[in-house]
Length: 64
Image (tube, rainbow, N blue to C red; front, side):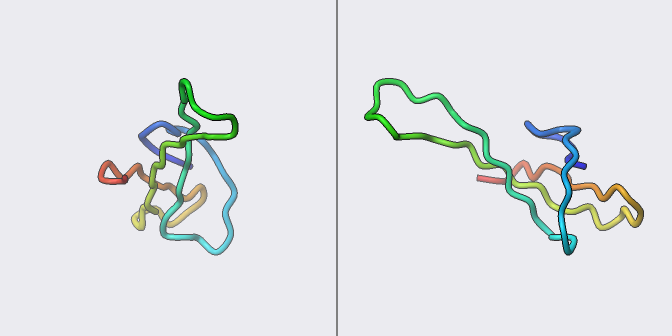
């Protein structure tokens, strides 16, 4: 489960319990050539204090 940030409350399935999950969000782009896109990047880090399912990943406010 993702906690905080733009994906708060989202549940996803992951394998191997990764330390970090990256979430991208499409951003509108005005007056650009066809095919150009921009995405916001958000980072969620695993909460090592949670030992049972569902694992939790907290929003990293210092993400780019």
